Amino acid sequence: MKDTASASAEDTASALLDPLDSLGQVDVLWLAGEHSGDQHAAVVAQELRDLRSDWTQAAVGGPALASAGIPVIHDLTERSVVGLVEVIRHYGYFKRLFDEVVAWIRKKEVRVLVLVDYPGFNLRLAQALHDAGLTRKSGGSLAIYYYISPQIWAWKSHRRFKMADLLDEVGVIFPFEVDTFADTTLPARFVGHPFLDADHAPAVRYAEDGDILLLAGSRLQPVRRIFPALLRAVERARREQLIPSDVPIATIVPNTAVRAVVEKMAAGSPVPLYVHSTGTPVAARAVLTSSGTMSLACALAGIPGAIIYRAHPVTYGIGKHLVKVPFLGIANLILDRAMYPEFIQGAARPGSLARELAACMHPERRAQTVADAAELREQLSVPGNERAADRIARLG
Image (cartoon, rainbow, N blue to C red; front, side, top):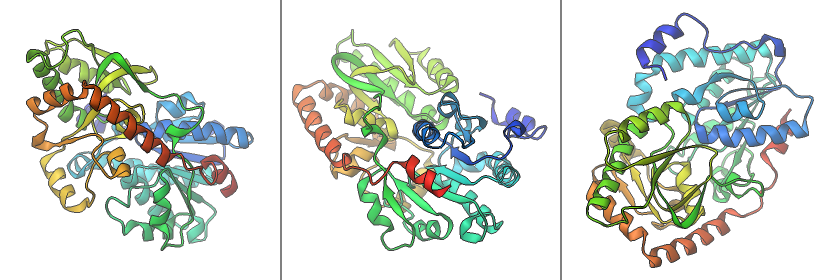
């Protein structure tokens, strides 16, 4: 992973996007800026290829889309950031990438653009394409499908009206999200949650003799803020004999950049850490996790745990006034209760987290987590209207 200074110097010397001139016209372009979105997009892209084998697909995405056989013109997941301060620091890179994507779409005469989550970049891109007259909503030929809607039910709910002006359709992965677009002209369809797909291979599972998992997320900035707190928590728990000394401590990393950061932090810890790569199923008895996608995966697997969130103080201060929801964790929001207790900012202290880990080992906590997981699965098991791939194929 290049640092910002060296990356900026390199970016000014050459184009960020691979032109892929050998492909000619491109039927579908995917844009997934985060690892979870990249993984979900890869599954849908494969389904779309089965439906329309004559279509050419390409992506601004990551390794999962590449592994699915989709040519990736730029790996956006390597620079995934979140929060106002972090975005400002990388403004030059994002502005340049933004302009190049617009030019690439025009050059390749892309028929369908599939935006996957990542609203800060994706909605601005949709606006630029609309202003350029390239989209169907502005008289052009480009259809825009949004897969995995921005969480407008959590904050910035007014964005739904702008989305209706810019997009042709949105595919949501939580049943209740359909209603959030009811007062707009934007077609919104529940396409099922990826974790409930029949052929989904879970990244984690519960095991009584499994590891204690420490999951700080897939973005470098949150990992640097959250992972030290997780390490100190297990160190404290072992020192105070709150957990057995022989319980393996493990983490799951999405790429080599996050692996390098995690291993460097763990090098100074007295607790041995086992580092697993994404794609390797891990059995766990308890988890301390960030509030991202993996927290929902762990909850569905019935692994007792807690959520830890730490952000830049400025980012957190602004977000606290904008986000009007009682929880950060998706499972907690769906159930409307704290299935996973949340330790935010200064509350994520080693002693508190160590005691929470000890509580996760109790049979009563495991039983309650199993019951919560069953309810969570039931709420997410509503059949989707259609698969996302079906809807994208129709737009083309």
